[in-house]
Image (cartoon, rainbow, N blue to C red; front, side, top):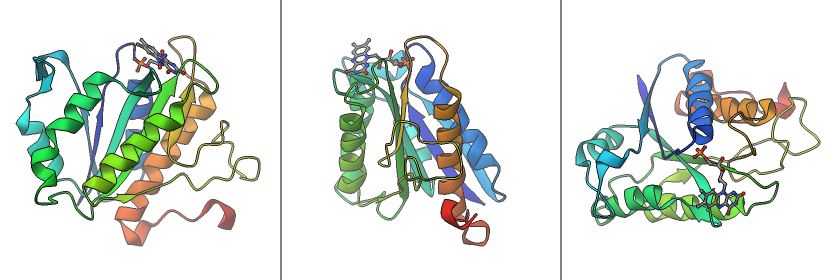
Length: 194
Ligand SMILES: Cc1cc2nc3c(=O)[nH]c(=O)nc-3n(C[C@H](O)[C@H](O)[C@H](O)COP(=O)(O)O)c2cc1C
């Protein structure tokens, strides 16, 4: 059984909805156990993420997907506190070779969501993880996903509490892709091969 952890912060629920869509997509691949790790205020003390049990459970995962709303062109401070807490693991590269991916939501069509994903990529690379992209060329995929043209990870945009169905479909697809990559026998076919 391959394990996939999705660790995310969400204040008003849109990033959470993306996390659930990624979970649903990953669950479509056999032999995959998915677990959500929402970052809550009880885990943050004096600005620090203190829930070491979560770090330990993520250490058991074969893949970790990072999620945060875009706040001022970057990850939310709650997610950054989580990221900072992983520094103890960084010293010994305990997450090396795990797969990683990311997702974010912003209220603007270009609200610098890419900067949030770049930070997540940096975090993953600091840990020696392997970043999984969105293999859907905007305007050329047969599937109706990736409407905003981000291949670094899932970028969503909304000004309400609900998400665009294509953004949810993109998140669902990324979950399926990363779980497929974990289970070589059920590797998701490349979009262009379908
Ligand atoms: C402090 C703050 C800063 C924000 N900065 C940005 C931003 O830089 N770009 C953007 O597109 N949206 C920005 N937003 C909007 C949020 O990213 C958006 O509402 C998102 O959907 C919230 O995610 P959540 O529902 O998971 O909490 C910001 C919101 C807040 C509260």
